[in-house]
Amino acid sequence: MSNPAGSIALPHVEGGLAAIDLPEIGSPMFLVLGAGVNLRSRLESVDGETFSVAAPLETNDLAVLEPGREFEVFWVPPRTRIVLPVRLVVVSGSAPLRWTLVPTGGARTDNRREYVRGGAGAVVRLEAEVSGQPAEGVLLDISEGGLRCWIDEVTSLAQGDHVEATVWLGTAEAKLSGVVHTVREAPDGDPGQHLILTFDTPEEVAQTIRQYILAWEIGERRRNKRT
Image (tube, rainbow, N blue to C red; front, side, top):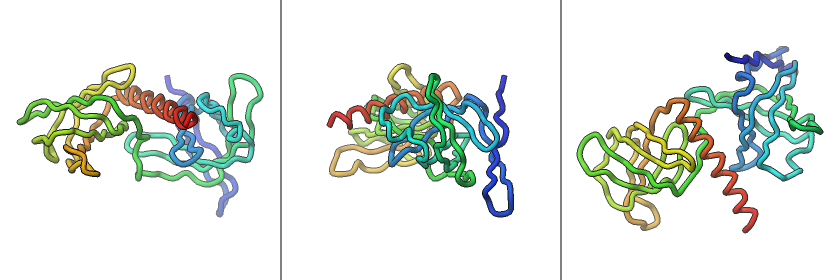
């Protein structure tokens, strides 16, 4: 059963009241708190000109919790993402912790980076529909719409080839049917090739990929804090 959020008012715009259509209550939202820092949250409620999201649990940086902080949030409908600039106005003082946000401008569609991307190091097994033996590569990054991997030997794969890719994403194995988008020589004198594969993913697999990227981002931030 869906839980529609409806629209939120954006009153301070030229020409009068504007409306922003938010996703369903409970939908994932991502909080862009700095360069390369996208924290996963979810939409909790909508109230007139404000809405609330779950406070991300993976940050202990109290500076990001201060009211007045401005940043962007985005959510990911199929094939795009919607970006909304916001200001943090209230931080709840008791569990469950929530951030109350107010839009500071209109929402925009952003296709420049279609999905949240991350992850690295997992083994990728590639099987082409035609010609060549199965190949193994190392994951460089992955999103809901594609992956990039390094193969240390030159392969017969070419742009347009249909490929079945199998990759272990931390807690589950993802099987992906895709098309080779790009094959290029590995940079910096490394052997082999970099391959970009694009694919469409059912929601169950897309959720596994999002969870994997979130866990990877948390791990990267913890490692960075130790160095």
